[in-house]
Amino acid sequence: MSTARPLSGEPAIDVADLRRTYRTTTGTLRRHRLEIEAVRGVTLRVEPGELFGLLGPNGAGKTTIIRVLCTLLLPTSGQVRVLGMDVVERPRDVRRQIGYVFGGDRGLYDRLSALDNLRYFADLYALEPRMQRKRINEVLDLVGLQGRGTERVEGFSRGMRQRLHLARGLLHDPPVLFFDEPTIGVDPVGAREVRQVVADLARAGKTILLTTHYMFEADSLCDRIAVIAQGQIVAEGTPQQLKAGVTARTVVEIEAYGVPEQTVARIRELPEVEAVTIEVRDQAQLLTVQASEGSQLTGRLLQLLEGVRVERIAAREPTLEDAYVALVTAG
Amino acid sequence: MSAVTVQRANRTGNFWRIFFVGGLISYRALFYWITPWQYIPTMLAAPLFQILFFVYLGRATGVGSTTFFVVGNSIQICSMSGIYGMTMALANERQFQTLSPILATPANRIALFLGRGLPVLVSGLQTTAFGFLVSALILNFRPSPKALPELALTVLVSTASCTGFGMALGSLGLRARDIWLTANIAYFAMLLLCGVEVPLHQLPGVLQVVAHVLPLTHGIAAGRLLASGHHLGAAWPYIWEELGIGVAWAVIAFLLFRYFEREGRRTGSFDRL
Ligand SMILES: Nc1ncnc2c1ncn2[C@@H]1O[C@H](COP(=O)(O)OP(=O)(O)O)[C@@H](O)[C@H]1O
Ligand SMILES: [Mg+2]
Image (tube, rainbow over all chains, first blue to last red; front, side, top):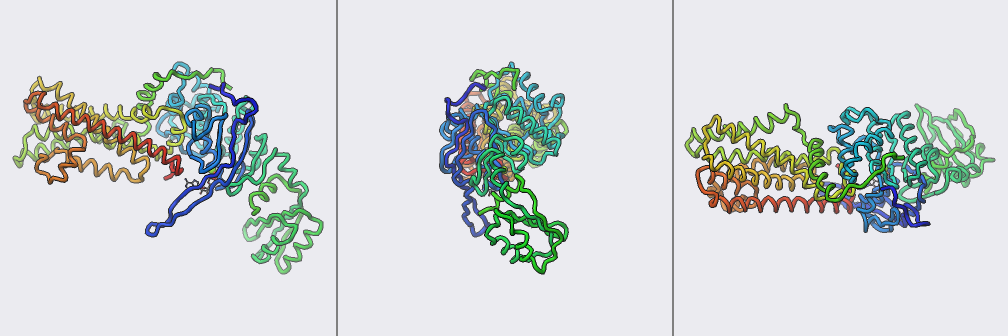
């Protein structure tokens, strides 16, 4: 089953100008029609064997893209192909070649054992009955659930559930895998184990598209990353390339009390300022200001902050996190 | 990544495995009342009291024979499984949010869908058989031995047909939020409309029309004929009609399921509560 490969030169995952809108209604008496443009013209290509990360905040459109690729959602417009097969025209062929793993603790049969969950899906994925047992044990091993197969899923921790999701997605040994926030809600140790499995799969030659809103996860796992915000890709490249985009920047952190909103607005208006974020810590506020050019910045900020109690102000080296924040908050 | 080479099952074999094995696994996953201390009270004890209630009511008021009530109620109680069980075996996918992972598989939808009816059918037969058995033991219900196989056939067809109807409710439940309200109404409406407790001809005309497209109505009529000594020939038209209605409901159910699958892909409604 893992033999299908795209024609040489063709990407394993090919998304061209994908758009997807949702129609919803609000209100019970007076119905308001609402159109949400979840994905607004996304184009991306993932080469065979590549581990590609789709990084973006909640609501950016990541799940929508994944669900279109997994044939669970139709595109509003655009072309989407997996291994050269159109997801709208040949959904059943696509389904045979892909594994779909999503994050969260739902989506499993709680009252069944892990083994029975996998047995059911082994049939749904048309695994030859005589090798099902061996393969199920193998995937349980792979995700570190060996020996736990006969336990009911309702007693599983969040991390174990996530690993069972993984095992289910791998059963039919598909060449292309989609992971939608696979570490969400999993504790740090469990999340590291999940990432390890993903990394192993990539090393074994699988094509993987992974979504996450954790910068470091994308950084540590992915060959290439696309940053997505409000349904559009705002940057794309290797983790190094994305970092290079911000190394020229200056980041200034200010800890202060009671900064008025007009002051923040005026900081944003400074010509060299690219992004401002505010975090509240106890009574204090932490302003992080990113600027393209920093020689005069600290002085100008202090000027604007006149009359405000400033506890601390310091410039620091930009990180990949800053790059991400700048990208998803811009515009 | 895999030492075990993953081989694809042969198509026909896979179809029947999804139908039989898959149907049973998903039933165990989704049917709530599966443990004995849930199954016995809901699927056996409560239905038995329904039979007893109506038979003794009939005896006390002199409005209907024991045969009339035993056959009507014993057949009708299969809908504990056919309606509630079947609705659970489909609509509970919503609760576990397992519809997406299932529909992301290439599995044959006919096998996937219809296979879920088989355990429900077996459970329904069990309830009805129990009803008849206890009626024979304590209510002095005595059909002629010659009629027993024919009565069994009638029960099989009726239970299957009720399961088909339950599938339609289950399909609706994949989309509708409060399918349990509808299932409750269906169960009690069928007590009235299928001629279980009241002869059909005493109902207003509109209700009689509804009764004719519901499952069980014709099966119960056939069962009463057979239990009171009529020939199979007299019951055949009813049995056929019951079968036809059951098949029609199963087809409607499957088409609804396919329609919701397509709609779900269009609107993005899978697993959104
Ligand atoms: N089925 C749906 N119906 C209506 N709106 C939806 C639906 N699914 C997602 N959305 C909206 O589309 C946007 C993108 O959502 P999503 O793709 O889930 O983003 P992400 O996975 O990046 O968090 C959000 O605004 C979300 O509320
Ligand atoms: Mg998401």
